[in-house]
Image (cartoon, rainbow, N blue to C red; front, side, top):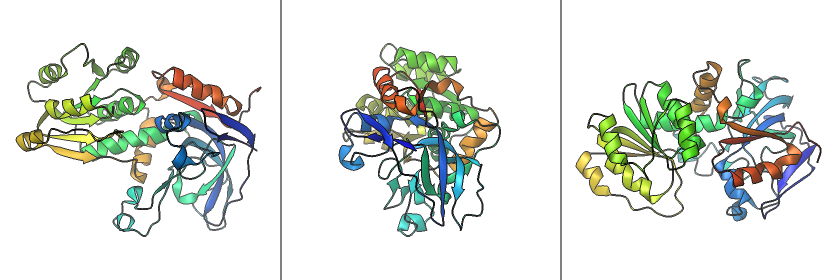
Length: 343
């Protein structure tokens, strides 16, 4: 079998990998499609080499088919089509004991801290798997993981039908948050500076505003009849968004922090006092978020097809990453790990 190893300097080496038989509580997958996400792009640009320790197989947004099961696995069958919730938690720390294994004190993220999915065969713990219904293709299944991120963010925000939600940042996760927010019956607006991403949101029936050419606060106030946003999702990771989020939030509004900031931002704490705001952190996802994401795609409540910018073979992985680096407006490049291509 073949695997793509990130070796540093924006380069992958596709070569023979190791097929690992499953232990008693594990399952071996024939990997189908793997999505390239923002974290993968950070790895590609070399900013996470110390954590990833190349050469390493990365990737964590995937779908696949069960090829082999361990002796103690009873709820999974060979041939099942599945996705992986790529979190390896200890099960014995205070967070795990409290039912929050997704923010385990010793959490390892599969595909970053441990080998990942850009390979034809991947052996994982059975507890990480979620089955795909017949209505969800393997191609669309590769979008379950990022959609689960969005489901977790919306769940953390306690967003309700009829409320006004502003998503600051129109990248893939921001766009998916907007779709999940819309699915619960909220009024949704995306604030984004890139015209291609604004067009993408409009094509998916999301109201948009460009804060460079328009007054974001004035637009939000007019849209919400002077109340402000009940919920603000900060997904951009820039200081300007931090400044805006407290300004546009309604009295007793909730701000959900989704983005990872490279530097400590300055936050206007006075607005938290003045408006009695809430700030909520949102990190990765829980099992229920994966099940919700699967349901949203299976019932066609959310169409993920427009998010797929390209599909490449495993041998074309260098080109797939380069295309995303050269086209930051692209939403989601997929790699088909069962096809090797001509190179």
